[in-house]
Amino acid sequence: MTSDPEHSNPGHSDPARFDPAPGDPALGDPALGDPVGDAARALAAGHLVAFPTETVFGLGADAANPAAVARIFAAKGRPADHPLIVHVSDASLLDVLATEVPPYAHALAAAFWPGPMTLILPRSAAVSDAVTGGQPTVGVRVPSHPTALGLLQRFEQLGGRGVAAPSANRFGRVSPTTADAVRAELGDVLLPTDRILDGERSQVGIESTIIDCTGPAPVVLRPGSITDEQITAATGLALGERRSTIRVSGSLPSHYAPVATVILDERPRPGDGFIALHEHGTPEGVVRLAAPRTVDAYAHELYAALRAADEAGLRRVVAWQPSGGGVAVAVRDRLGRAAHREAPATGAAQRDR
Image (cartoon, rainbow, N blue to C red):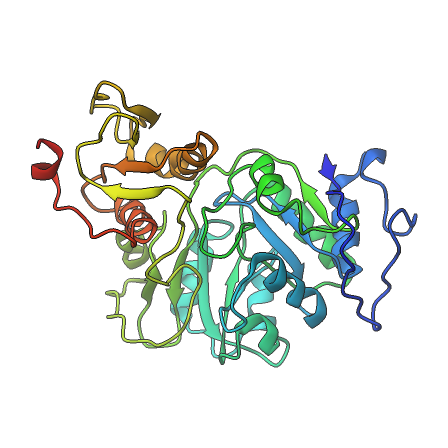
């Protein structure tokens, strides 16, 4: 179902688009049993929709409506030069939003879409500066979550050509993986005409892999659940070195941070929150926030655990980072940025002090 956060701030109206008043029948009523269609109509009318994806929940607006896109930045407190990812329902729209799409980008789309991967490409004239932060490139993704795909398909049937959406949280904070987390994070800034789509909790739990496809070989700009090895196998190309100045989501040194201070790889003190693989025991007096059995489960549970720390009023969270490659690289990336306020500890030797 959908939720209409009760808030009375004035909205941004685009005179080129129909902008119904709250309760207008043209917008639809989520109580009538078509929440996805209702949300698609809200997007087409210039409103915001928070929706689940397989990675995290996104806060979406019609990518072709600069006024609606501006509301995303205002709601999140996001810098205007920090680009958004455009979500579409099918890879065929890649050539509408981007130009100079190399064969290896099409190979990646065929291998991993729908799925947790964003491709960075030269933008077409159909994409505005409001979405790209003034850059000549655009990030495009086809999510696999059934609710997200349904929303995008219904929006495209209404004439839409992409939903611009970052994660549905305050800028720099922990990404939400449930609708309740979105309500807690943004419920006071969304309007009655905006929507929060409920749906299955995000399965992956961390943001998409971002791949720069503007050069002769793919370059990973943000690690995620699509790994370096998978990218190489799909394209037959060795990964290029990151030399690009392209700005992408989640690339600032401090990001994904709870209010609590995150400490890496130290032995937790009594009263600390603690996140580590299941094989590591919980010291006496420590609050266990997550004990995932696998690295994939670690990624899935991480953000919920960080949010739980803030809900419990904890001052510190100690996280023991998973070792190895694959998804563990992405988990360490997120933890490193969450802990940026503290100098990272040095691993197992610190744990056993």
